[in-house]
Length: 354
Image (tube, rainbow, N blue to C red; front, side, top):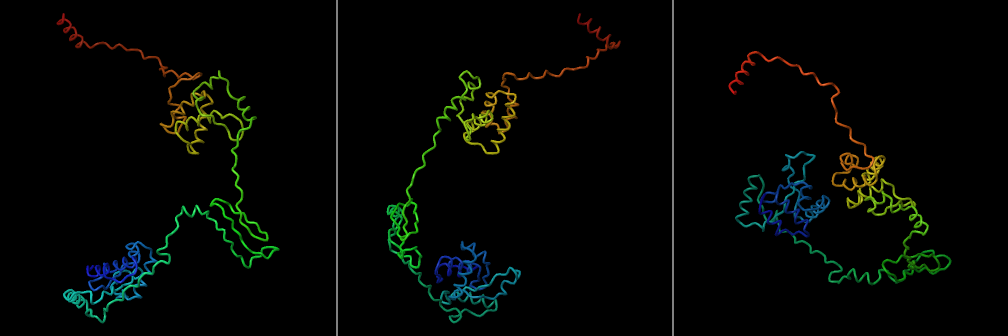
């Protein structure tokens, strides 16, 4: 690495765009003080210059064509396997860039490597980079997007369609009528082709018919229904989309779970809860299963497991089985006679206490 080469590439090289500057600096960073024997791979150059390999290839060709770099001694990369070996480049730092003292040091390094000195003949000054062409619309004020929307977006200028078979008439003009950006053009192939906006009609919202309303009122549970008086009555009314049939008990349980969850559950969770709710409703009342479903979001999504741990009673609940009792009769106690020595000691203790 040489600061002479890096400084020249960053500040004095005649490059024409930022990519060339970055690629040339990356080459100079891996070169000697005279700019020779630089061989980074194209992947390294692409990563350093923030571009792809095709851009690197194109920029290297441009730098070599203008004489800023040239092909160097390929033996410098002999340590790298041949199938992975990159191309060796020499950065052509001009003779005039070096000071007299620095030029003597660089030439001494080249002499140690068996190379000749840098001279104005083999390192002439480089041609300056071509000025970048200005954009054709430079200085022209662009119309804002809002003004383009206000103009309507569609042009009213007729377009000539020469060579188009327009039917029986020989008039071949495509007329585009003015319309808003949201207007849909309608194409009619007559003697004159015209694009006219089609009328827009808003779809009226579908309302339930009187027959559906009457059917729902008939099937509604009475006020004295214990199931309707249970907490499930607080749930929002949810019915099938295919008819006027009331929602099933399992759907009421699912609705209670989603209401407590604060949103719609995943499809797999919904199917699982519907199946578990149907299984629990076989021997449990609806209000009890709904309450367990409301408790479920903070414990998981297994309704049967949560219901088995609940201690809330309900009507018709089977009594728990009594605790296991020993079937075998208690073993008879066997009286073992007290040893004589122990009996004498016990008697002496009693006498002392008395």
